Every structure is written in C-alpha cells, then in structure tokens.
Image (cartoon, rainbow over all chains, first blue to last red; front, side):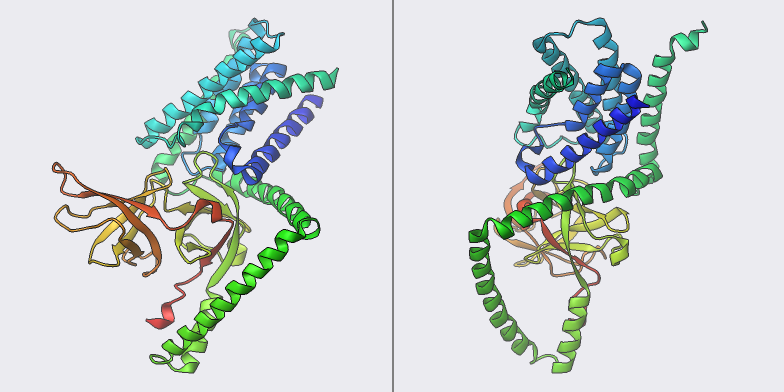
Amino acid sequence: MKDLQEILIGVGAGFVIFIALEKIFPSIFGFFDVLALVVIYFALQKGEIWGSILGTSCGLLQDTFSLGVFGVGGLSKTIMGFLTGYFSKKMDLTTPLRNFIFILILLYVNFFLWILLYSFIFSHSLDTRGGIIFLQPLCTALFGNIVFTLIKKFKR
Amino acid sequence: MPLFLKKKNFILFFLLILFNMLLISLQAPLGERRNYLERAMFSVFSPLSHGVVLVFQKSTDFINRYFLLTKIKSQNEKLREENLSLRYENEFLLKALERYRSLEEIKEGLLKFHQNILTCRTITFDASNPQKSIVINKGSLDGIKRDMVVIDRYGKLVGRVIEPVTFKEARVQLITDVESGVSVFSRGRDILGILSGDGKGKCVLKYVLSTREVQPGERLLTSGFDKIYPPGIEVGEIISVVTNPTSIFKEIRVVPFFRPQELDYLSVLMKNPLEFLE
C-alpha cells in the first residue's frame, strides 16, 4: 500500500512538473522528459514490473497530450521501464557517474525507439527543433541524476 | 515452481507490449477519431492539467497585479491607445457598411457576430511537437464542437477543433500540423491549393500546377471550399516558390500569420461570423 502511495505521489508530481514546465518555461520544455524520469526512478527502486507498468501509464499519459498515434509513447516507455528495472539489479549503480551513464543510455534507448516508431508510422521526418530534441536525453539524465541524489540524501 | 511463475515478469512485460501495440493498431481503422481509452484519459487528465495551469496563471496574475505594477501601467496605456484606434476603425467600417446594408441589419449582424465568437485560452501545447496541436480551456459545455474554426487575437487562422472534446477542454489541430489541410487561395491571383503544415512551424501549399505563376510575398486566404473553414480568413504568406522539372506541381512554402508565442488568447468561431454579409 505504501509502495502504491509513493508511486501515485511520484506520478502526480511528475505530471504537475510536466504541465508546469510546458506552461512556465516553454523554451526549455523540449529539453526534459520528466515522465521518463518518474519511470526510471521507480523502476530503479521497485524493479522491472513496476518499471513496465509505470512505463505504460506515463507513456500513455504523454500520448494523451499529443496529437499522434496513441500507444507510441506507451510502448517506448514500457520497454525503457522494464530494461531499467531488469539491468539495475545486475549492475552496481552506487556511484553518481555510473548512475548517470546508466540513465543516459536508457533515455537514449527510449528516445530513439520513439523516433523509430514515429517515423515508421507517420513516414515523414520529425521536427528536431534545430537539433535541440537530441539533447533531451542528456539534459534529462543530468537533471535526473541531481534529483535522484537529492532524494537519496533527503531520505537518509 | 511452474515456469510461468518464474517468468511472470517477462510475461507481464510482453502483455504490456502487446497492449500498447494493440492500441497503436486500433488507431489505423479509427483514422482521425480517438479510441475510448485515449478519450477517457483525456477526460480525466485534461481537467487536472487545466487546474495546474489555472493555479500558475492565477499566481502569475496575482504577482503582476500587486507587485509588478509598472508593467500593468504601461500595458494599460497601450491597451487604451489600441482601444481608441479600434473604435475609430469600427466607426469608419460601420459607415462604409451602411452603404450596402441598413442600420438594423448591421446591428443584428453585429449581435450575431459577437454571439458566434467565443474567446478561450490555451492550456497546453502538444507534448510531442508544439506545432501539431494545443488544448484550449473551452469544451462541450461552452458549445464547442468538432471542426469549429480557431483564430488568433488578430483574426488569423490557427486551426480547427478536433477530438477529443471534453466538458471544459478541447483539442485544436494547428494548421502547421502535417496531417492538417486547408483549402486556400491567393489574394492577388486566382490560385487555389491545399495548405498543409510541415510540422516545423511552416506550411506547404500543395497542388498548384507548375504552369501557374506564383510569387513570394503573396497572401493566402481560406477559400471555404473544404466546408470547414469559412472563406476570407487570412492564413499566411508565400515565402518561396520552386518549380521542379520532374513534378507537375510547384513546391511552395508558406509562413503562417499566427505566432506560436501569441497563442495564449484565441477565439473559436461557433459559426461563420461574416455569414450575415452574404
């Protein structure tokens, strides 16, 4: 029950940040994928089952607020959530640098999977916003690493 | 232990993958329509996002109103000047219109005009590409229906209402979306074409024969032939024209008149507001 409460609060906070970021700082909105961070955080904490369930939920939430094919974001985030939970058990992610590289790789997996599905379904090129969109996983990983470290310190 | 219990994590993962793939496949026969799950999620989460945006808007308004008064003062002065010039313009246009219509007809027409325009605000932009769609803060309770036309504060075309429409929110497809299509004509010449977005903030004018003469700088207006957009709304300006020897159509790029950074206040045309002039 406590797990579910924690997850609901996490998803709620992610959703509020997702909307607020887009409304208050529209210019930097494209640099961050807040919902992907929520998925990664809980997949690291709770494992691959929660990772994939949250991946589907957060991905579909993202799809709800975009005019495209419903399920594309859900699919890419489900895979990312599962991979995060699965590989985090088999790796030592205690140092911030390792953690950062791990998150970065997963975010790029999610990102390229999404682009691949998008290009495959729509058969036209994606607006990269002058290449800014390719920095999204890097910025999200940096931001996520800081936030995760702070949460860890706060919990202690 | 049975094999399916050992592998339950993988089974769940593949079930979720299948679920997402099923959702993607469902979209193909539905086309522009949205599936029930998406509609349900939109109905639940769009009021939440509306609430979040409202909190931020109210707090920004509060700060602007009570702490940043200098900005308000200059804004007020600017609005007064604009109001005065619009009043003069209005008087001038009314007098010009009196040549063609009686005063009563004009009054009735203006009443209809105001009844048919609904002002709204943007809640969110599209999460995957801001050039595709927006969500507005008016919905079915305000009389919003699918295919209603949305214009910006200067009367330039922005897009049309598409599904899903909830009680207090609706999604608007922008003309810069690749999937959009508007029948337009050039003001200077008799050129008709279909305007689509390029997904990058600009538009392309399709199906203009390469034998037709088109020049950059020409302004495009809605023709009304698509039966969605009423005729005469300003859409954009041609910025480049390329004649490709291998194609029977010209490659025409258009910059839309609406500015994405000025989409906070919009208007929805409930009916064609200039209907009374016809």
